[in-house]
Length: 372
Image: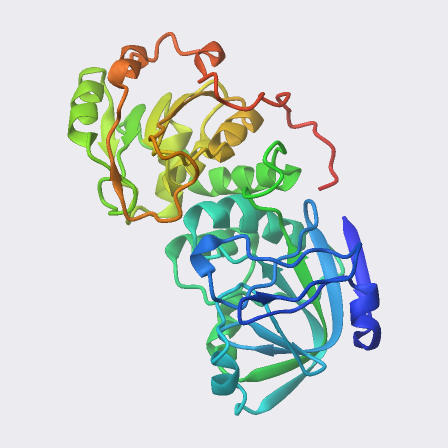
């Protein structure tokens, strides 16, 4: 873990992070960290992202925190955390009175705290690391609104009940630790940290063993969402049903129920989406088939399968335009349907991975180094 400390008087020279105001980037001096938004869905938002590999901590003294937008005001400069505050939020929040809290606080920073996949794969390991760090005085979180957030925080032993009281107003602390964690938009060839194993172990232990009635072969169709909807779901579902697959709807399913479902699965076929993060609860050797919409070109779940020793086959669709799509509100169809010959899955192996994929990194075991 890399720790950077600085007094606000020499913040720009020592801490090497710079504010991004109203979506405009301030060019830092040569050699400093870049400041940018890693999430295209928050364009126009004030967003500060630290480009520091793995988990890191940045300490800022005498900092002021605005809620609920998590804007940070340091020595008259507007900074932001989480990436959802807009420029007009400053005027709305400024009139609130200050509340002095003579202690330190830690904020897990990630602008995808409310996304199921990002929360489990990025935020949860950061929270787990916080839990095992002895000098952390306390933690403040973004608004907790989802069942999976409450469940995970409870499993880790966090009690964010103070959020009701802290939801409005301006709070001043002696210092703030920013605890950042890499996301899958960067360092694409990296595997996730040891802390992710600990997240999986804790959630599995809490969930217990699933019912024997749960399906062993599951199909995640994403038919319940309008985003990147596949038009061939019925056709594909019929084929998979003949192979003994059960179509599952993860929307509304509790976190622990999803853990139980995937812990007992032997085969998973899924349209690319957040639900695939649940494959980290699968047992080693589980066969996973991922179908990606045109030009997503995402290797996140493939790398997750490598870490947890799953057998992952990734099929990528491409359209004639090429390049990444900037929107998500489109439908798509499976252009090359020949892949269904492989969906008996009894013979699926690593050698069947699409040739366009990146070279797979070396599989790691539970004995990977303890440092993040």
